[in-house]
Amino acid sequence: MTRRVIFPVILFVVMVLSGVALELLPHQLLMGSYMIVPHWLFVMLIYIAIFYDRNDTYYAVLYALIFGLLFDIVYTGILGVYMISYALVIYIVRGLKKMLQGNFYVLLILSAFGIALADVSIYTIFTVIGLADMPIEVYLLNRLVPTILMNLLFLVVIYPIIIKPMRKWGRELS
Image 1 (cartoon, rainbow, N blue to C red):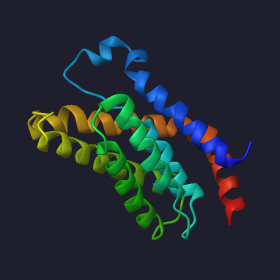
Image 2 (image 1 turned 180 degrees about the vertical axis):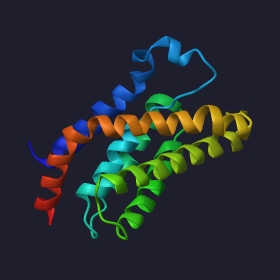
Image 3 (image 1 turned 120 degrees about the horizontal axis):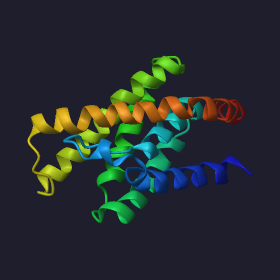
Image 4 (image 1 turned 30 degrees about the vertical axis):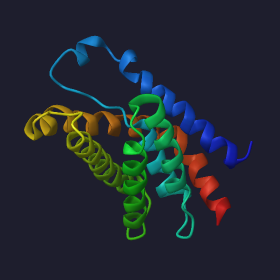
């Protein structure tokens, strides 16, 4: 199977899994005041942006647009929120990657930054259109911080599985 098929299949499976992730987590974790949003699709896009994309390719941005729109259609019902947020933040992460070497620590830093920026932009859009009314202090403490930590945990767990093929495919691209 070529990368043209593998990446969309992987991203689709991760998108579906992130949609059911909250059902798989223990209810004791979710019954508190913390809200966790699995941005696993976005984490996979960061992997593609850092370890697969070259300076002249924009696969991660293209996949962010396509799968962000799919995510909007399936999970939010409001077109463009995830599509624009994910694509814009992946574009920014790609730009920052050009200044840094692609390794595990850079991946952690750029992922934390990207997840925070994407989640804040989604929260801002939902607040502006009136779908979210959570005060900013509550959002930062009860949603943003747990979301970043949980998604970084996902990033670390899948790192050993995905890093070798991603680097290999990235070398083949150039």
